[in-house]
Length: 415
Ligand code: HGY
Ligand code: MN
Ligand code: MN
Image 1: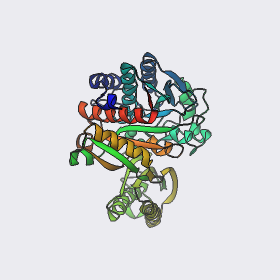
Image 2: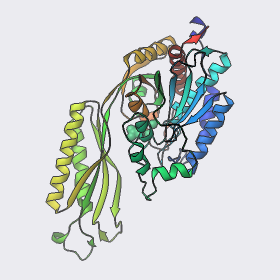
Image 3: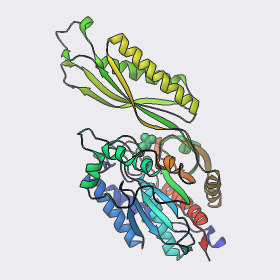
């Protein structure tokens, strides 16, 4: 299809669109705090919906709030090609994590409109609800329900730190749609995303052809000790849940280091009770995040973390319970779609390399129900989940150009 060989998206329009979305739910340091199911999330959804309407797309919303904007194909009976990601952000998130995938997909449709092209298959731009899992664990919750991993009842019952439930908040912001979640069938799903790691930039590559995604466990550990005075309680009489959390956090780091390469581990969320300066914590709830692209290593680490937690608790006389609150096995993306993405990067002349995704993405779940692939662009210093997250307009355009060419190939341009 020579006519398309040199087609490119409108890089300035994409960059301006990203900038406009970033103004909704702004952070305090230049990034974003547009957490899922907040009023800011709702405002971002309304803006996205308006843009989709302006681009001539029809919008569907399912019972998990997942948004699906459709550009019609010439064959309405053909399964659509989906592309998208998420608009929700971390509390101290960047402007591009997830957002590039949704607004890059919108730019692809805008460009196809400008070119006056028709495709046999419909094309659907998607915004998945609660990819981050920062407010309601686990991550990728709504795409997980869509893929049949979680039940909707489980999802609706998830609570945030204030005890509000996912279902209540989705209804409150008015984005509980009527489509049955998971009823839609996909011919393919493509997700554009920033790498959130340092590899592409360090290797001087513009495009990551994502062949695999690493697996993850989120283990929520509750340690029960005894509240007591930090001043008057003798050291040998303390039952200190905070000390237990600190020792287990160190063990998690040691376990990940012992499984290098291709293993990571950390504790990101800690709730200390009563969280008073002069009270020895009688209770601590914290989540361990361990990941590896190797199934055996991932399972080994989970066992080692659980044994270490119970051993530390026994040493300190603490109660210890462990609940998995997030999990997915390592992912292998669709080899044929990987070839399509690699071919598009080559045709466009972008330096590219195969890469394994370090972060989890909605694509990890859609991969269970449809052929799926990811496209990555670099981010500065590999930094993400930080308000200083940064990409260049050129990287954003390159990733979106590859998405354009891959989607046109898979959706089949009609001459
Ligand atoms: O946790 C993750 O990997 C993703 O950013 N939600
Ligand atoms: Mn993301
Ligand atoms: Mn993220």
